[in-house]
Image 1 (cartoon, rainbow, N blue to C red):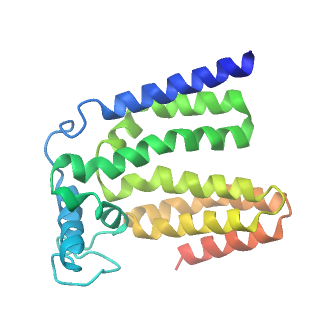
Image 2 (cartoon, rainbow, N blue to C red):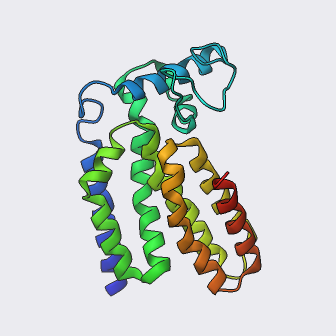
Length: 220
């Protein structure tokens, strides 16, 4: 009975988080940020012509306004802008990532400190103004919570029975941070120390190898 109540509570929290993020989606915030528009236009050109708006075929870094722009969100946009460029198609991938971050947060909390802690964590994230705004705004750095938490969850799973494929998946997600906003690449290094120490404390050699390799590559 207690477990059923916890599942009902989790479902209500997830529903609340989805409603908050989807209400008036596309019009709040109004208009498009210049970086949102830049990523959307590059994705539109890549979908239709195979080059960005500067004529470069599938670049590893967008030129954008001249100072460069990370490409992860732009590439995620490609299938969504097929129907046209507007605030909804530009922000829809970020809405989906924001919603998916909620159950990922629950799983991370559950694997870290149990079901009660997980419910508190996912509730705080569901009502967090910071994350609500990120979920409604298609900026390149707003993919960080989802990408990092998926990588962290994979590392947590890899400590059980030395699941090398989970560690590999986690390393791949952390490498995806290289396609995000430049400052995130430096900020995320201290965060990686937590799962690195976790893996080391569990004496899982495969996990340590993947985690060390991921952190080492991030510093280059």
